[in-house]
Amino acid sequence: MSANGKPKFAMYWAAGCGGCEIAVLNIHEKILDVDANFEVVFWPVAMDAKYQDVEAMPDGSITLTLFDGGIRNSENEMIARLLRRKSQILVAFGACACQGGIPGLANLSTPESLFAAVYDGISTDSQGVRPQAVWQVPEGELHIPEFYPTLKTLAQVVPVDYFMPGCPPEPHQIAAVVDLVIQALHGQAELPPPGSTIGAGYSTVCDECQRARSVKHIRAFERIQHLNHIDPALCLLEQGLPCNGPATRSGCGALCPLAGAPCIGCYGPAEGVLDCGARLLSAFASVVDGSTPEEIERCLDGIPDPAGQVYRFSLANSLLGGGKAAGDDEEAEQELSYEAAYHD
Amino acid sequence: MSDSFEPVLIGFTCNWCSYRAADLAGTARVKYPPNIRLLRLMCSGRLDPTFVLKALASGADGVLITGCHPGECHYLEQNYKALRRYLLLRRMLAQMGIEPERVKLVWASAAEGVKLAQEITDMVEEIRALGPLNWPQRHNGAALHADEKAVKEGTA
Ligand code: SF4
Ligand code: SF4
Ligand code: FES
Image 1: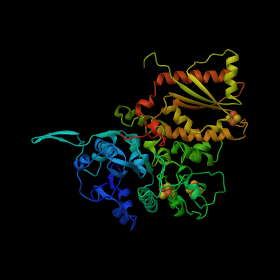
Image 2: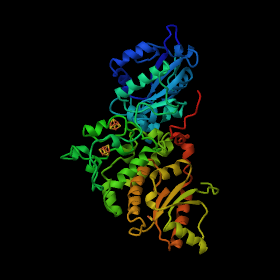
Image 3: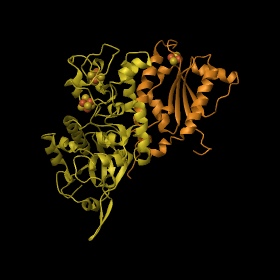
Image 4: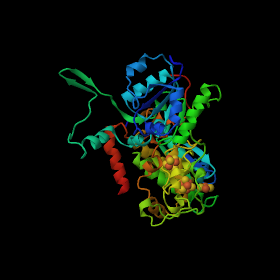
């Protein structure tokens, strides 16, 4: 408890887009409850703060920390460890902290190919330049955070108390979690056991989806822009659109299929699903029509990027964790040659 | 690759065909290398791609999936399902940089002990030539964290 008697709150933005930070502000008047019940001690997006201030706090003195984004560099990891030490409840907040999220897709590429895309592309005029972790200038030595070979989830670096999925988590779910924590602080509710997923459901998006399922086989997978007509009442997967609903955790209210777009899996694997991608491979393969390898392959051509489709948000937390060459530049060329050979 | 490398293969067999084929190879004293660990499923249709990923992530150098010939599955069409899953899984594994030789699907009836033994022998040699996959070392145990519930208590 701080001088004014309020429990302390912190939030940190690691390797992610920052949408989670906006989502917290998006809980409307509930944000006033956060302010009334907590003292915000560290939240770089919302207020000025120094890492040293956090270091000076007693261990375990922050009651609740929301950590969004994955661990991409040494600074992300350093703050993850620091906040772990200082916090009683550490929440992996949002798809990136929980599952790696979109930045986790970089685990299919090597650091060098990522740098090449960023620093040698058309968006910069600094061709060939690469960030250096240590750099000598006349005034002395400059340090920037070290870029890691792969992106890790928060739980791959420090123990995490709760996981709150979503890209970003839905405002009503955030509000419910805030309420729960406040009630628990007043002894009026009990927190779920550590390691639980909070602010989400336990089954799948399909379970929440109102679209009707009827056919068992489809002849081709399509991209949404190539369909002339989308039946508003029928399951999108059955209309040939790869939809990640069958393996994705419920909690959003099946927002995307409701709006006519396939689920891309932002809530991560449903309860009991060990590997989101494997479950989706099964779901997609099961509806494919065709018995000969040729017929099946023709249908599968409609999913041009299977890894990106089935692991859109969960690659860093998948069984394989990424591609073989991730973090290994020597293997990069080899990997490309396998892929090229496959597509020949 | 050093001569001492002995590949570890996981083989998924169907109760009604390939498992019996392997049995037949045994009783007929047809030899195949001991590098493969055979696991019996009731049908190739039971093969969840998770099994294959888990085997590779846990250190297997290759995975052999086997089932009844098309049209001969005891559960009617489940081996077609296995084929569809396998073909999609293969595309994804290629994106991950895993050599296509490492995961194979082979049909073998209960009478084809010799054929199955030969397939296993060939696959072991192909993978020996490729070298170890070493996935657990590569991804620094990321796979072992896949189950979020395996959260350790206490602070770092
Ligand atoms: S696959 Fe997609 S569209 Fe079909 S029921 Fe599931 S969530 Fe709805
Ligand atoms: S439908 Fe899928 S992608 Fe859309 S918000 Fe829900 S979980 Fe996320
Ligand atoms: S029973 Fe053998 S593959 Fe189905």
